[in-house]
Length: 212
Image (tube, rainbow, N blue to C red; front, side, top):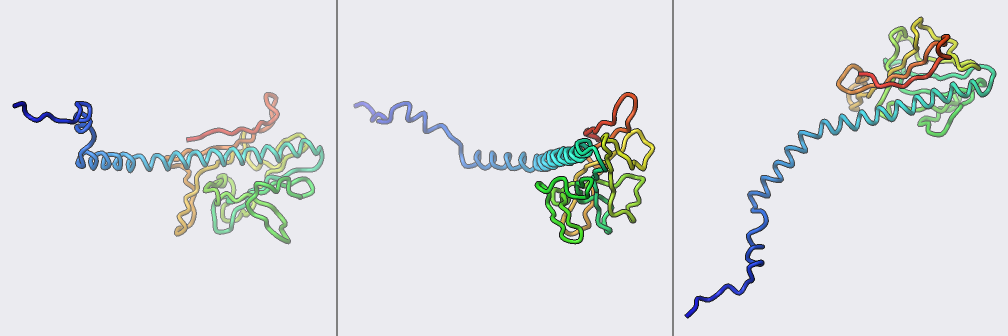
């Protein structure tokens, strides 16, 4: 008498041997968690660097807009006003002004300041970036830094004797508990906006570049 044969086909029996045991599944989940945890700080750093680059390009475009407005109007001075609060040592917002002191742009600005200021400003703290004050500007006394462009697109009030007037855009550390502080000089990348002095070789370009 023949032994009772297994009614299941060979393919079904083979399929039963495939798959993961509970222990293998737990080990896999554990390893994925370790890898994800180790990569999280790098992911957050990359996100911050991307945000800083986007905001630096937006500020650069606004500065270019102010300069172009001066050239297009052919009269008076346009102003790029960088504003800081008395309790802070960095620029936390800015505004764009035409020769008649009206706003060059109101859209894409975050703050509408009512009378008597009547200004539209871009809030940098809301975007987790800031502009540290240049070394030659007293942080404790200056509430507004103004860059004037004339009809030729040249800065008329550069207080430095350097070949370029520079502003750095860097991440802002704001945890909601401690006073906000720029993250300049850290592992995070910063960006720099430079305004060249006019020379025989250049009419005075605007430059955006990454800095360590």
